[in-house]
Image (cartoon, rainbow, N blue to C red; front, side, top):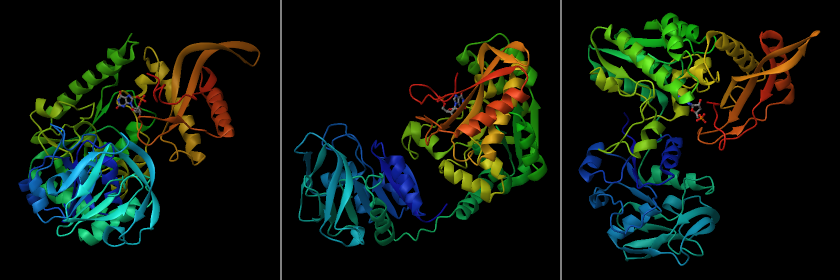
Length: 514
Ligand code: XMP
């Protein structure tokens, strides 16, 4: 992909992904790998540098995760962070033990004694973030100390003859305000990285890889209307154009205009071989009478697989199935990319399908973070609307239409949702919020319209701020925007007489209502 690769060895740190982020911010490509990746494999991958992450274990405990000690003999620069530093010292001449306190956690003041190499341009005194139980207590004469804190005399060290550095604090977190400088110094001056990793380089090398892998066979790419599958398809179309067959299943649970956007983008614009499968009736009849949310999900997933499989079988010469799995999906569950235990969180929609259909899997986005996927999408010519789309759940409006799903309820929900999103866009707040939508509540309430009383539906507006969707806070939308949305929905959507705004955070609530 690029000759400037940095490997991050994962020892179970909660910050592994963050280290990867920080390296990418220096325009250097990196991958998180298993902690025990053999030195021979490291040599083959030929990285410019290695970063050993932190981790919760003690290096001297039986069963603690170790790296192959031969990686230190490859001549590749190594930066050990916290546990990674302790491990390097454990192997190369140092004593690791518990701190005076059982555990040091929080801010500390770092004093730099040697303002060279990784500390070039670094303030003599600065704040760093500590989170450790053990620390390096003494080192052999092969090492020298670069920086210290009150409680940690060896807060940063360097090997005298090897390109090896260790830091006890966490440079990757925001609480270490100058951490990026240490990383930049390490990558540039120790590893010799030029920081040239750009999206175009990714496109070029991925296109070459896809062509080499696929040959003359065809690739099926499922489109959901979301960002990841759209970017994945656009990348494949760039690489092998007519060999790609896109399948979009219209389950009748999409938002207003969604199918048309997919059709317009991929058929009219990218000239893709797009198969839009109209399966609305199948989904709706399977959902008839079902009120339990998990039951709805199960039914939708099952029908989807049937419909997708049927369509896929009709495409001759198809050998591959493409999925828009992203980097966080890969490391979330497995913790590492390269190695036998790497487990991949398959997209809920097509999980298990590739093997069942005898397809080989292609995941061209598996090295990218979400914001990188968006940048890639724009570079590939996808419309901004598609690239900046909020996430949308696989079961679609079925989990926003509480209780039984009917065509009539879906139509009401769609209209309200469209009004909310349009107003949010007009107010310039769509991109500033993580997810916004309407929910049709399963209650009727009394209202008054003109001279008469009404007994109609209530719509809830939900809008949240979040980076990772694991936790979320409700968006403090301007009052006048909420008022405009409420008035517009009540005036324009028949059967709705009440609007509420959801002010619960996650946890304890979830983002969706079902
Ligand atoms: P919750 O409601 O769990 O949602 O806070 C977190 C994120 O996941 C999305 N979500 C789903 N996505 N299938 C999906 O593909 C689902 O069944 C599903 N349920 C929730 C939700 O929209 C939010 O972005």
